[in-house]
Amino acid sequence: MKISPEQAAMVADLANLDLSPEELQRITHDLEEILTHMETLNRADTTGVEPMAQVLFDAAASPLLRADEPRPGIGVEGALSNAPLSGAGHFKVPKVIER
Amino acid sequence: MSAFPSGVASWTAGQIHAGLREKQISAAEIATAALAFAEAENPKTNAYLEFCGERAMAIARTVDRQLAAGTDPGPLAGIPVAVKDVIMTRGVRSSCGSRLLERFVPPYDATAVERLERAGALVLGKTNCDEFAMGSSNENSAFGPVRNPHDPERIPGGSSGGSAACVAQGTAVVSLGSDTGGSIRQPASFCGVVGVTPTYGRVSRYGLAAFASSLDHIGPFGRSVHDAALVLQAIAGRDEHDATSSAAPVPDYLAVLGQDVKGKRIGLPKEYFEGLPAETGDLIARGVETLKKLGCEIREISLPNTEYAVPCYYIIATAEASSNLARYDGVRYTIRARDASTLAAMYRNTRGQGFGDECKRRIMLGTYVLSHGYYDAYYVKAQRVRSLIVRDFAQAFEQVDAVVAPVSPSPAFKLGEKTGDPMEMYLSDIYTITGDLAGVPCMSIPCGNTPVGLPVGMQIFTRHFDEAGMFQLAAAFERSSAAAAP
Image (spheres, rainbow over the protein chains, first blue to last red):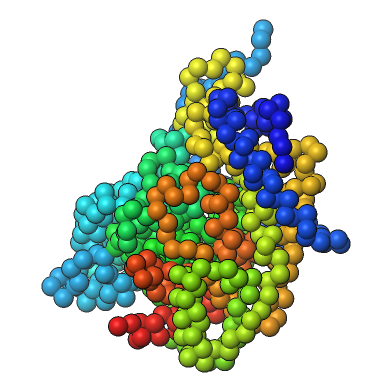
């Protein structure tokens, strides 16, 4: 399995990862090796087999949903307590709209 | 206090109960002694990243008040416990072994932690682990590796390396870990302790930092089956904060521990024994002999899709991880790259600087297998194969009551031995990841040491929600091994 440098850069871009050229090269090499191993899966006969997103058990008799009523949460202060930058009850980020 | 055993390292839950009941020791004295011991011993292994003495003391005082008032302090009263750092503890740093969360202090408790403390447990601190639980050796922690208490030159296993090591070292009586692809059972095997991965949905994942949500489990470590079962009893059961947690009733695990296992049908999956090195294989074979002597009926079975488990797992787990880890973008979680003027650059730089090598590799792999043009070939194919693996177990459990197998092909390896080759590291997870993919309960139980003194665990799998049957078998095995020990 070969991954071109352009392809690798595109994946890093999709993943929002800033990688140094050395890192990108090393990871690309690892991915090639791992993806080659993953070709083993092609031998598995999955004709007529449904894909499974999650281990599913028999559905419960009644839905496992709680009543839809408001409850106290962690609050604005709790939610912002780990923010690198916040103010006026909000997370602050670099400017996204030019005026 | 004189009748109470002197070192935390040997305390059992039963001794603590008796000590408290007979007023030989108070919970506050236990907390003080356990913390002092754990802090003094920690440099030998680096198992703990953080201690939370005040928190442990607060619970201890509550337990002592309840005891004085004659009310029930709970089934885990006064028991020192350690919690893996990917499990949230309100007000106590929970770094997930990552630079990115070096200063992260959660504003809430994981349900499992809340239930432990409600049962009277004393949370001593947070344990080291591979970054975001991604790894098999604990070498991917941003805060240094953990050393195996049996040999400091060796890894404790991963990703719950710290949680296994502290129980083996005796700096906690029990602990919580998490298992997505063997991360409880493999370190339990390498450190010579009991490690339990319950049925998927048995324990709420609320407050567990998400790695691969369809595979993530919280489970206990202990120095005995009894102590691990006691912890699972306290944390299991439906939680409205986790929609995937099961409402299935939680039976009394302790009630079955003394029952004999005569006539139980045990399956040995032939695919797990092909090419198994003798170092491990001989010990497992002896373990199987013990089960036979206990009256179990042993037969060979087949889990024919085992060879696909590693590629299937590393596609599904990394795909889910690439999505789950997208949240660490510099907005909400403590660390933000300074040198970014646009939002996009801030995301990229924060993640590029914050994540370690293994996380980056898995995010890249997960993004690749989910990307346009590859999604069907990798991700959907892996999900179909997962159905086959689930079917393998379902068919096996039509013939047998439990499946017994090795945990890992080898005992604990040396620090640095496998870090250069990620694929080799992934392949060592072959026997454990099937349990996570199928969502069945499974555990590692010590079954002896290699000639050089390294522990090896034996794995037991049972049907969905049959943790009781698994504990019953493990407890009988444990009694029999203890009786046979020199």
